[in-house]
Every structure is written in structure tokens, then in C-alpha cells.
Image 1 (cartoon, rainbow, N blue to C red):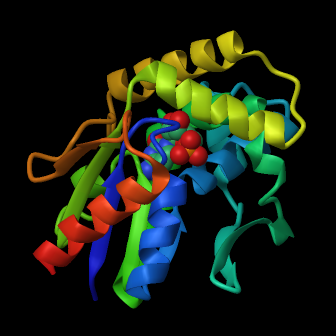
Image 2 (image 1 turned 180 degrees about the horizontal axis):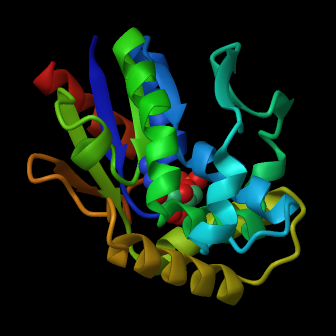
Length: 220
Ligand code: C5P
């Protein structure tokens, strides 16, 4: 099986680019952030503080988080319920970042991510795919852009979905998540030593997709 690992901070364009690249290659696209979001949502629904192991840990026993694909689009099932839309709010983003620093949560999701790549050719995106989940991936890419550009993109996406949020709030949330994701003790966000770093600040979506396809095809 072939794996392309794409890591990077929030709003670097990972999911949009990875989805197109996967389609072009005929691979399945796995968005691992959605798994952390599902657990973040579960914590919020149960009144647990997402950052506190003692509160989130007990919620994991018996919990079912599954991915399924409908017309090649990933859906996330939390205890059988499709939560793919519910997990896309700013509140759940922060909760996902909170639970993702817990060892128990990362261990809980590890096998699921690994087995997806054992059974399929994948383009998998996240924060620790090239470093921890798939250290033997054939291609590793670290996608980044300036915080301001990433916040602009995220803000536009949220406005399109009808959310009422200011650019300043989006930028502040994104910087906090970047800081927390790259400073946590377990599986912090950082490029794998053998990753190709791509900065998309001045690239259009199409240019980014073409650049990644060029890198991937050069390595496969
Ligand atoms: O990619 P997305 O913004 O959906 O991820 C939500 C959160 O899940 C991130 O801020 C990060 O804290 C966490 N995450 C992670 N490891 C991954 C994917 C996401 O820690 N592989």
C-alpha cells in the first residue's frame, strides 16, 4: 500500500489540497483531524473539560469512532451517529485541540489511523502523520502558510457557512491552536526530518495542488 502523509498547522489548506490530490491519484483521503474533533465534540456533549484526562479518559471506554466513505467523501460516525457537520464549529476546533494533547486519546485513535493505511492507498492529513502514525510513508509533506493568510482562508470558509465570527477572533484561535499543537508533550506538530516543506502563502489552490502532485509523482 502507498501512503502520502500531509501535516501542517490549521488553515494551511491541507484538507482541500489533500482531497484533490487523493482524487487525482485514485487514493482515499483520510482527514484525521475529524477524529480528534469527534472526541472533542463527545467531551463537550458530556460536559467534560477537553483538556483534563480525568474527565475525558472515562468517556473513551466503549466509545465508537469510525470513518466511512460516501462517494469518496469521508464521514465520521460517533457511536453510530454521523457527526461530520457538527464537528466543524470553532468551539469543537478548540475542544479537538484540547483532547489531542491527551495520551489516552492519541492511543485510542492510533490503530484506526494505522489500519486505514494498511488496507488502502491513502493521502492522510493531520499533525503527526509523517512523524508518528505513518513514519514509513513513501511521501511526507509539511504544508504551511503565514498565520494571517491561514486565518484569512479560515475566516472566509466560516463566513460562507454562515458563521458570525470576526477575522481577529479566527486569527487569535488559530495562533492559540498552533501554539498548543506544537508545544504539547506528545506528538507535537513539527515537520518529519524527511518531509518536503511547502509554503502555500503566495500560491493559489491550483498551484498548490500541482506542486504537491509534482512532488508526490517524483517520489512514487
Ligand atoms: O485538522 P483539524 O483542524 O481538523 O484538527 C483539529 C485538531 O485536532 C488540531 O488542532 C489538532 O490539535 C488535532 N489533531 C492532532 N493530530 C492529528 C490531527 C488533528 O492532534 N493528526
